[in-house]
Amino acid sequence: DTGVSQNPRHKITKRGQNVTFRCDPISEHNRLYWYRQTLGQGPEFLTYFQNEAQLEKSRLLSDRFSAERPKGSFSTLEIQRTEQGDSAMYLCASSIGLGGPEKLFFGSGTQLSVL
Amino acid sequence: GIQVEQSPPDLILQEGANSTLRCNFSDSVNNLQWFHQNPWGQLINLFYIPSGTKQNGRLSATTVATERYSLLYISSSQTTDSGVYFCAVFSGAGSYQLTFGKGTKLSVIP
View 1 (cartoon, each protein chain N blue to C red):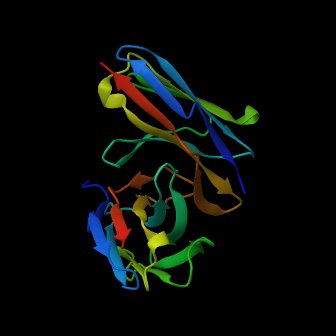
View 2: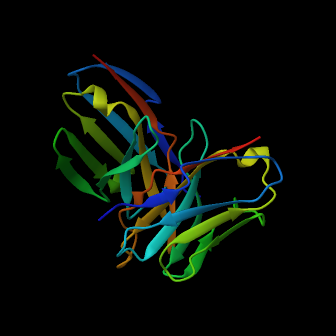
């Protein structure tokens, strides 16, 4: 169990550029989640995958955001035409996915700064 | 949607002191989790506790689902306990969206 891994750890970009983040979940975990956290707030749900299927998306997830989990293993989150309001910590989590709601394990996050 | 409220928002403790953090939620839930976010941003899952009481070392948690609250107890606090403590609940009705409170920021001073 190597934990949830996220890359890069930090990303600085200019407004209007596209960025992509990667998440590698714990190896035997079927469920993968993306959250966003701004300063002084709790994490906010963005989207959820069961294996390769994206089953839930938040209304926070505008059409500039897209997430994939092509083979049910790692996932990518892409933000197109970044805006300053996208600056936040992007957190990935995974869980084993054997039944109902269960314990989540989070990665260290990707801190995005949009200049 | 479900509302999660945590109190107090900030807490300063002398090393060795005990504390109780509270989490209230607005609707019936079948899942509650406590997390600790350290000063480097890492979120650590402390407890998965939909009901009852669990203990892990100096930490323990109690959830009373029928009364819609949970408590996190920290005994003999250490400086490494500093950080933000979040409780979070799933919204239910087939949703896997975890809703977080705003957290309690704990500072333990030597």
